[in-house]
Image (cartoon, rainbow, N blue to C red; front, side):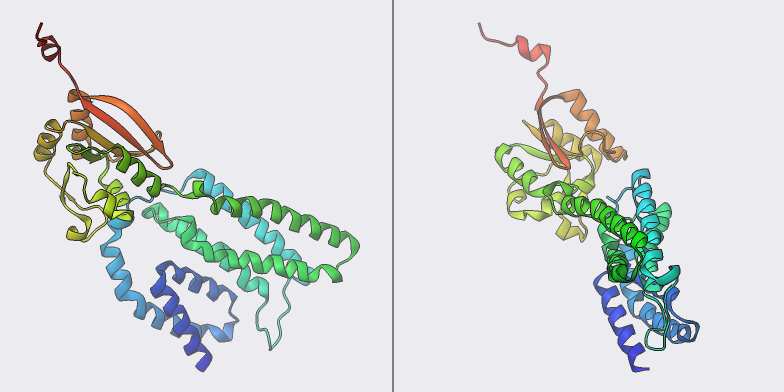
Length: 327
């Protein structure tokens, strides 16, 4: 009984720190022998009860992750390839393709490693069909399962016949070829979807007193939270309440007529928006911002940053104004 209490406490702690850790709990169910499923179910119910208040609070604030897009075809394909590769590894990880079970080890390594690698990611992708929540790093812990399978394959190399040893070396080399470049990519600055440091530097350099900052998509205001000292002295044209005051990441925006009036009176506007090719929210307010920019301002220089753009707009000079030149 004590091991199950410890297990439940550890899983509950993991779920409190990161709610998607609960998907690993489901993976564990696939590894358990029949006699262990009842105590596991009791532990799982207690974990669910313990994390339910936090889950309810998180669901009420789900708008904070509205920036997450749906799963792309490339992500589905990449995961399918890695899942197939993990299944091949699981075959080589156990004698004859089946794990040894003993009283000391009531389930095989493959029984826990394969579900741990596949299920959390697969389940989060399925959930994302209803509400986009899939971000690779949210289920990064699933890679532990792949690491276990690779380790088990390497552990079996000495006992294999010559042909299987060659096949194992090929499989491991393929794993390295697949995983090392991806690991290096994840550690590079370019792996981040946006570079808020570079954005803050550019806004600080370009902003002049009297300018206005305009976020095309209210969600992009979250970028300003990384360097509050930089954004504090800048005039946010559309903002009514700051993120801190409105208790969310995006703040509260003014009604459209007030935003329009502020835009018309701005001597220059620094627009912060998505990179080319990324979808911008099409709400009435966002469309109004774009319309005012097109009608009354001239698009100037564009500064491209990883994950964002800063576009400088100057007021459009009408023909009448251009003619008012004193001879």
